[in-house]
Image (cartoon, rainbow, N blue to C red; front, side):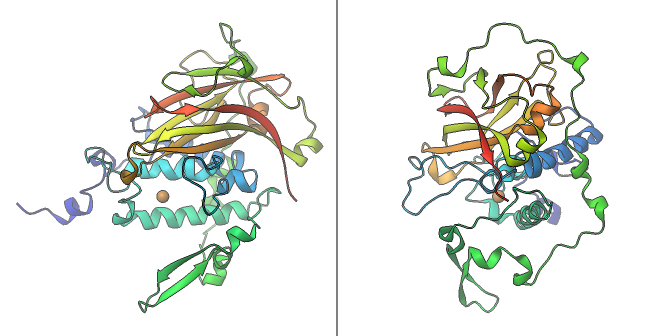
Length: 352
Ligand SMILES: [Cu+2]
C-alpha cells in the first residue's frame, strides 16, 4: 500500500495535532483539556511572557554566553533565552511524533530540519526577535560583545558557493534584503495579553511551612515539587527604581539528561487554592524551562540556567511588599534526574 501525499507529509508529526487543532505554546508533552478559545488566550499570554516579562534584558532574551572552548557541562551554565525555552521549544515538541523513538522529526535536534515546518517555525522565531527589538522597551538591546558579533558560520549560497556569514551581518535583517510585513497593529494581540491582575479576594495564604532557600541542600533533584522562600533584594520599588533595574529570578546550575525532553514550570507567590493554577494566563506562572533532546547525546548531562522576570509578576499578584518570594518548581516531563543547584533573586540593571 502506498502512502498518500497527506500521509507522507505528516508521517513524522504528532497525528493528534494535525487537523483543526490549535498549537499549545506551553506544551509539555501532555494534552491540556481546554477549548480552542482558551488555548488562544493562553498562547497570547505565552508570547507576551516570552517577549516582554521574561525578555527584559539582552541576556534574558538571547540566553547567556557560550565561549569557544567551554564544555557543554562545565560551562558556567549560560542561561537559556526566553523564547528558546518557552514557545520555541513547545512548538518543536508539539509537532514531533511521540510514537517515534526520539520524537522525530521536530521533537529532536538532530532531525528537526527534516520537516519543512522547521523553516517556517524558525522564520517566526526570527520575526519574534525583530518584534522584541522594535517594542521600544529600554532593556531590549542587541548584544554588542565582539566575540558574538564576529562569530561566523559557513553556508552554501544559491550558486552552491561556500559563503561565510557573521552574526554582525544578521543583526539588521534589512541588510539581508528581507523583512516581515505586518498588516496592522491587530497582528499583535499578544501585546495586550499581560496576565490579568489577581483579585485580592481570590488569594489565600499557603498552608504549611515553607523553608527558606538557605536551608535547602543543593543540588536538589526535581523528581517532586520544590517550594522555597527566596529573599528579595528590595521591596515596594518606585516606578523610577523599576525603570533602572528589573527584578529577576535565577534558577541556576540546572543539570539535565540531554537525551530526553525535559520541562519544569516555575510559579511565584501562588496564593490560590492548590490545583487552581493550570494555565499560562495565570499571573503566578513565571514560565517554564524546556529543552528538546539531542538524540546523539543520550546519557550526557548538560548544564544550563534560566531567568524569569518578576517585576510585573509581583505587581499582578499583589506581592510587591513582601520580603520573600515563594518559588515553586513543578516538574512536568523528564525531570526525575534533573537537578537544580541555586535559586536566587537579583536586580538586573537596564542598560539604556
Ligand atoms: Cu528550534
